[in-house]
Amino acid sequence: MSDYRDWQVGDRVVCVGGPKPGEPEPNPVVGEVYTISWIGLDSYDEVIINLAEMPAPWPQEPWDWGLYDPACFRKVQPRKTSIAIFTRFLKDAAAPIHEEA
Image (cartoon, rainbow, N blue to C red; front, side):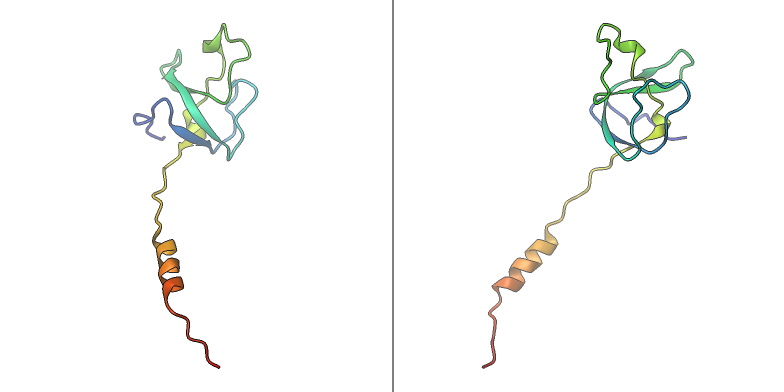
């Protein structure tokens, strides 16, 4: 089981599993990325999440909608962007070109 203690509202998660029985419709799509809008416990003290992209059709009852099992999601890890390859291209492009006649 995954550790959800470091998950926060605003974190991005990717759907990696299908819906569990009893989860609301529409269901998240495997491979799609969603934003956590709420984290809490259900009546069995199990962690559940709500997704910003899956809003409640009945705004007056948001607690009864969009509560998903976090086991169906994986937190998106930010990638460290490196510009080293682009720097190398620029250095190579700056080198003089010697053409033979």
